[in-house]
Amino acid sequence: MIAPRRFFYEFSESVRIAYAQIMANKMRSVLTALGVIIGILAVTLMGTAINGIDRGFENSLAMLGYDVLYVQKWPWGIADDWWKYRNRPRIKTEYAEQINKIIESSRTTELVVAVPQNVHIKTAKFGENQIQSTFIMGTTDEYPLVAQVDLQEGRFFSSAESLTGRPVCIIGYDIADALFPGMSPIGKTMQIGNAQAQVIGVLTKQGKFLGLFSFDSQIIVPIAFSKKYFGETESDRVVVRMKDKSRALEAKEELTGIMRRLRGLLPDQKDNFSINEQQAFKNTIDPIKSGIALAGLFITGLSLFVGAIGIMNITFVSVKERTREIGTRKALGARQRTILMQFLIEAVAICLVGGIIGLLLAYGLSMLIAFAVPDFPMSFSLDLVLIGMVTSVLTGIFSGFAPAYSAAKLDPVVALRYE
Image (cartoon, rainbow, N blue to C red; front, side):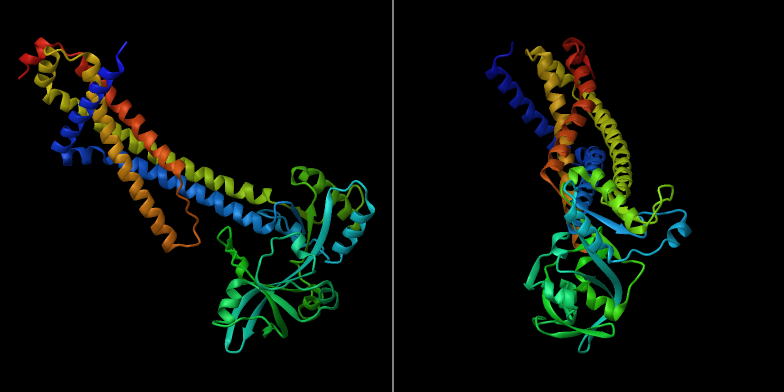
């Protein structure tokens, strides 16, 4: 058994020798570590992108609500049989009131409340400023029960304003910034399409949904006001909140039964509506994450393999160059484990230097990407640093063991005669 004091001395001496060798051959060491640098850079950027996608996806789902179902004409993520869905009757916003009556009369329901949404795309104007293709959503005062509504200033419209269709609105952060620069929008009257409405609230900045649709470019108005001036559309929907998101399947089945009753469908008739939930987005995003992970792992594995071969080759060369030195040290009493430790530490040190450089480059590139493309999610975490460092150490051990073992097994007599 090795005494701790002796082991510490051997280890510190091996570190000193390894440091001296690396500093004596700086350029060779850097070139040797290049494969490890590229590998760690690839695995870190891959992890950063996947973490960012996960975070952005979760933030986007929080905007939709984790415990809601969407009754719509179209299913999410549809790619085939377009005409079958095109010929479906539209979803009436009046269904929300009927669903709420059924919920109130039921003792064993999985549902809480249904809220209608009347959807339009219009131009928004105030004075000389205007925004094209603004998302207008008509809904009721119960909308905050099914969605995240954080107000930067002002208030949401009341039940009376909702029922009477008062010309009031709540605008997104980007709308306020574009139409009312340098002033508070509260109390101002703006034009929405061919109608006018008074701003009573401004939403806090929420960002984009999956990097596509911006919640900051929406205007929320009472649904009676929306129907009066803009009419009804094929995009109208009913949003239903569940009691427990862990029982989403039961809630979806209950809502399907309610909708079939409201539609007057016979038992043998197929559903002519869709009930959408978050799982559709998860099914869409998972293949993207898997593709990024597979590509990243392939590039990482290839780079680390090439890097490990390079380090193994250079370590073998170093063993040959220092054969007489190894013979001298063994003749003076150095043990096999001491020689083995020395060359292993050199290989691991080169990999660690490469790993640190790779992590620094990955961090710089992730910050650059986040600055250049703010809507692309990037998330650099401590876990990625630990993974990068552990990978570097394992690569060093893998690549350095064979040459280190060959050095440790050298016969001191033969080594001293080596020219």
